[in-house]
Length: 396
Image (cartoon, rainbow, N blue to C red):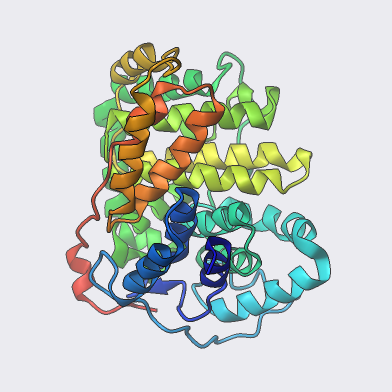
């Protein structure tokens, strides 16, 4: 059986629900895309998929599809956004609309409503959709749209202030935000901690109770709901440069963030989600692509702020000085280094690591072999321990 046949069958599999043990995301298909992109033997990809289904790195197996409580139609599809209900019915709805509208018509019709919720399910719905588009899988694309609807938590791009001048690139903005945190760290940390402690207001704002069980997803949802002036002060580069330029700069910026805290499980998701957002933007009309960029920037700041910290401007500036013009051109050891990185990634039980290597090798190749991406690709993460809240049963 060829690799394309195995990958097509696995990405089209309907055996398992999109989540397990409450809100934990089924990552199996993301791993398939990454492993295939790294050139792994199809039988090994299939073995990984089957093994993940039996026992994930969190110590739980995948679950069968859940029955839907509602029928989803064109008239009511927005009524249940973020309600964590009727995933299978959303799949049925988007599958039918895909037949009627075609892929680009489907995305153009529904993504303007769904994209503000791209951080929901800790970016995994976006990853599911974007990586489906990367792999050209129709059914996984349908699942991704359904998951965006199921788990939506808006980052409220409508709050964006008019673009301000003075920040001509993503790095300008990253260093500006880091500088504000460095100068006023205690006050900002206190603000976040108070915000997160006020769970009554969080639930009153409509945050789903299951996210409180997560801890991480609740923190992010609370920041998304509250916002901060730093988050919505739109930098001029969002509007002034082509979205393709912004994506290249965003890859560099989020990779620099990751190197500032190497192996950080949360920051790694910014890299794999950015790959997804870029794939999504490429399927949208040109006039919608800057909206994708803006939503990603807002959501990124909310995710980082939710940890009540931010890498210092001093550290980011030092890393930027070291990496901004560093390339691997002419280095004969680089090919062997990537070979070792791929070999390590393929043997990882934690599927975020082959995803990291897959994305960063692609970016390394297309950006003139910038050293930052190879260095970051070797900073593997570990599966985090689940909080004590998981001793309680899911609220779904």
